[in-house]
Length: 175
Image 1 (cartoon, rainbow, N blue to C red):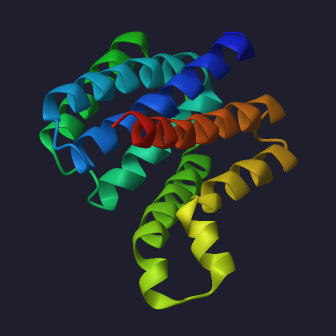
Image 2: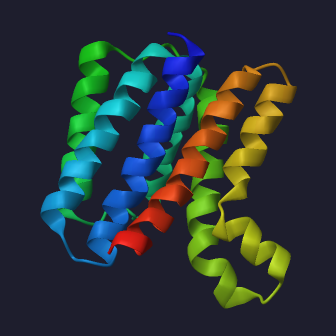
């Protein structure tokens, strides 16, 4: 799969993920949150099935959020089921379990840190670091530097993160 298509899948995934979360968290709108969640599941599963590096990232986010108990609503469960079904239907690339574990731990650290760090410290750097979930970004960058990931997957992941933030801004502006 070309990295251009992969980049589009990543940015759509980030946008749909955040918009779905905001629809529930702010508007308590399970119907449209589920629609956006399913859209996120579809694009994430397609990326997961066609690119091993994307699979590491999306599976890590999924498992990290699951372990952090962030899969906490019917919209998340439906999204999870759709993601799993599509990924299994299309197939998941062979993955190195050590790299997958590293990515899962990074995603988990981001989720736990995002929720807790501001209650533990007033350190601005740490608060910003975890507010914008930088553990996973650093880990993916290190996987690029070590030769395990292509630099373009890092760009794709940054697009995911940028469009995650754009979705939050868009949601605030139009709701």
